[in-house]
Image (cartoon, rainbow, N blue to C red):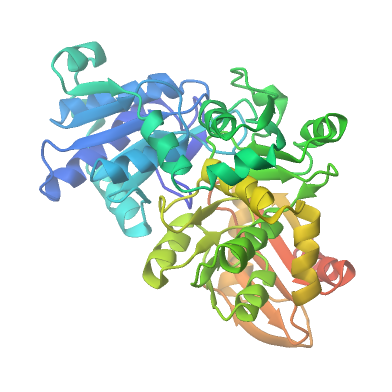
Length: 469
């Protein structure tokens, strides 16, 4: 059974990710759109640089065309936020992006977007799953891709210029030009290099790029920007005396950052920095949104600036929905995804990188200096995290222990327990710890935050001991 997680549908190539399942997904979406009275509507379909991504996008288009729908096919590998932007600005009811984002190279998948360029929420993906369950795979209507192009049901176009121009219109390009920043870019063999290179070079940054060639194995590493995978970018920044190093994940919706000293900037820190900059220096007003596994320092900064921070479950659809509801300035996750008011409703590593560059130019301060400004005013918290790979049997066992039997570590100072998304404990000293299953990979994830690293690690350690991990 094809099932969606927190970031779309993902599966191992040639196992769950097959042509048959892609055709079922497209047929299910056609059935849903038929029910919604959208017959003949146009959708945007895009793809990244993963193995079979382009072919998979064409397979999806063949079924959509066979169902009587028109497809705007982005004619080259493109960032996920570009597809979301196209769905939004072309007033389309849905869009599809073939990508497995930051997952290992053996995975591929499909993200679904709804009107306004938003991540499809649970109600939409549930209805697609229901439609798929009622679809007979042997009776799916399709039209050969080239024939669909000839009939005008598939139209190939590159919307990158519109997307790039929209970001350039939102950042202070003159300030960036005056700053003459030296920046190292690592697209991690993914799809950000064209758009981000164009934006930064238009702003007259001295730009150097690594890992920009097409490699479906992502150089043998996970295409997720973290301290481990960005070691080469860190060395490059220090060797070339760069002001900043930026990296994006495989489909460019997440951002990783290296500061001028070669240090990795955790996404938690990046989220706090950008929110502080937008409110303190740009003069914006409004709340912020984070998921339940992201730093509570954001709450402190928001309160100090006279604003509010809202917590939601993991899954960017929840972040973007809350941002829309409360007109938030920024929303983000500890995994590196964030959205900013006034652009698209989903994660955009390219726009975030452009804003970060503006932040350095406008403030005239390094990342480390600006973060010290924040911690001097609001204090500092220590964040720890750990992941554990789960077999299906082990996952089922732990789900029973955690959610049916209510197993908890023997903490003496628990203030509150929340089981709405995993198990999160708030403790009386202001620290917290969460234990939850990933919605995109077979992992059990833990995160904790406290005044000291030792305290945060001890909270995770208590869970590990309890669950024999």
